[in-house]
Image (tube, rainbow, N blue to C red; front, side, top):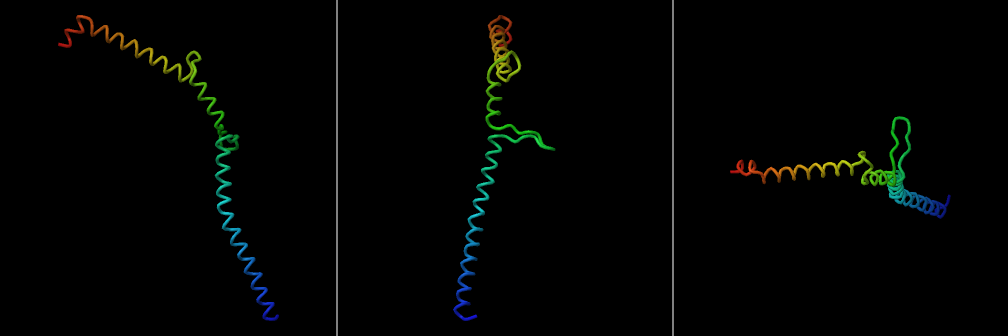
Length: 110
């Protein structure tokens, strides 16, 4: 091989190594971005059940469940529990006010 052929081979090898280095440098952030995208998609759309793992509902299903909890349905939702607690609190406040207004309540306050 002549010196010119060695030089040409060196240039070709340098170009190949540079291209590989660039490909590795670009692929890392792209893989990270792809992994983040996949995590987002799993969070958004949910994950079906598979052996050893329960199904994970997606964001739209979780929002629908929350919305159902915010509307009374006769006793089974969080809204019903809050309404019941508020009703009992009003009853206790009313009874306390009545007690404090009564002669017995005034004499015990001193």
